[in-house]
Length: 283
Picture 1 (tube, rainbow, N blue to C red):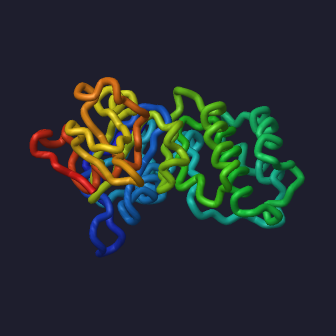
Picture 2: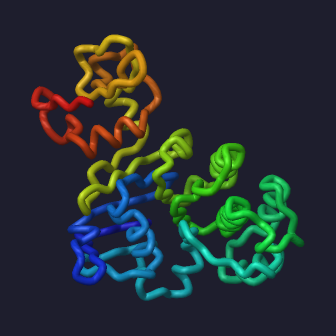
Picture 3: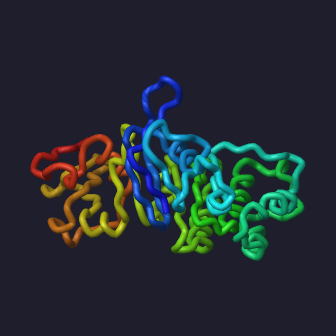
């Protein structure tokens, strides 16, 4: 669905945000993580065709997104981190105005989502808090049934119940055939729903791996004493969060700790990137 070949991008004469980056994405719910300024939002805008790479090629559903063809835009929905809405427009008017751009838009799903997110069609966008506006646009995005959904910091501005609701809606209303790319700093908000992880660092994808691969190859644990097999650890409270090879601690396997994994990747190198006997990362 998404193919990126040796792309580079910079804003004017500034240092390149992306530098000869490569990526192939076929589907699923994907978490895109990276430090501030690493190009996460830039990547989403490139995929939507709002930006053009300085070098390299971007292909989305077999097309160049920068050409902004109607057939492609009908299948790609972008929810930016910051957005502007008409304060006097009702939710129903917004849906009626925007839905025709998406031929697969599911009005029944949208109707069902209104009460789930605590909204009514007659409400005005200007009457809603930023968090509720975002929940409405998330509901709208899921109802488009687009093949590709691009969410930039979707949980920013959401309270705890709505963050939980976002995860439930994502699971219930997404399709396995869709690609849902979520760029976020809020790792815990999507840790339980992502199926694949991308870590963007220094202009390139430092990690590109699905959760099954991660859980099969690595064990994530917590212990009051540091296991000798741990190749990365962080002190926390009265013990250590650590990562080891799954084969070395087969009975200690836990859910993937994405935050710990991110720190291990960006501060050091994971063992599949360099021999484990040379890896001594610790915090």
